Length: 565
Image (cartoon, rainbow, N blue to C red; front, side, top):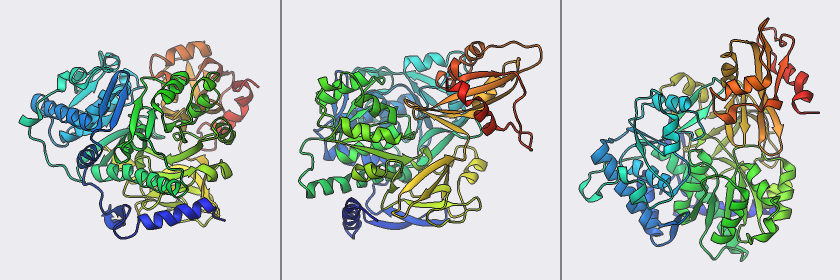
């Protein structure tokens, strides 16, 4: 049965979606299918930035070390960057401009500037190796790459076709972004609309190399506003009970901005909320506690292990983080026992869980507060008013409540397609424009989604997708390997970690340590199994009737050895 919280939130959303309300919708054609869109949504991210940077002009927006920028200052800096990109670097409407850097205020200003200049913000995975970065750049034809020194160095000797422009962190935008700084008064910016290219994010599919998932401005704007509508619903509920916050909302940015979680619900949503963002250059639970105390952080979002590490940190009692009312997680499953642990550690706050994908611009389902405590294994209900959730069979037919099938989302927030990959795009969508997530699940009698398995051969390590086939290809590149199988192992901290079993060619010799050392020269370190998670099999690996390696049997055979049982 629906909880009292469900009833209250549904009633609030009913009011928000009424004629004249902030969440009022109209039907629009999206890929040949009518679906709801927000009637008053800005036509592009540029209009979105300009509107909210004016509305919250004097409020603090970005905190990065000693750098503090208001919304108005951030907008002004972004226009200077856009002017430099247009006048000095020849960026034109639709050009893909890559960003490869760690989190910083200057990353955010660069992102805004690329879009104002009419470019498509192409967010390269900052954890990637040089070869992987080059592949991402070449895949979408980046004209220009804005990179920090660390990522630029990885690209030494790589062929990719983009011109690299360096920028720095932890200093004022005029200095750190000086190489792309121009005069907006003398620059002409293109008029950008909802159908123009907005972003490309990279996603690991079951076929190996990253695919570039591109979205138009309409999709990304609606992704940000979908989250903002959920926040408005929550604030309205809190206000009715006298618990609404009286200070500026503030989020700690602890997830990479090149991931959809960092980009949409954390960064882009903050414009609409007038929310301050406190940036961390790298994750450290102790530093997170210090910043949460100093800046009075009200909202924390990260992969599940992050909020758990805060809750269990030995120095937690030294800091006052009572201002933080929400501990959100996404990007990986959160063990149910962590939900209770977080609530016990922070009695004034609540654990939250979101479920969305790169291809949905992070939008999907959410589970929060008392409902999450009651259903800690569920990823929640679909976000109103934009998300249409369906459980489909392999032929695209809807399954009845309680039946397990593929989780699919239909929403205006969804991406348009994979860059230069029509076949993968066609496979991703049903004929009715539902996006196939590759996850298996069911909907219970209260409308809550439960994820039970994955169809795609992907490991999610601390929010990072690792395709099994990519790691297997890297292993097969070693001349001594005859067969291998890569799969995920459960891990309390990371959610999952990669593991590998391999069999050698006759007369060859290769230890697990040697294989790991070899892999570290070919793929990003986070994709490489630890030595204790690599097993050498003295027999050929079991196969299915199709002669494919039977991964389930391999996992069962070697589980005890790999998990150290």
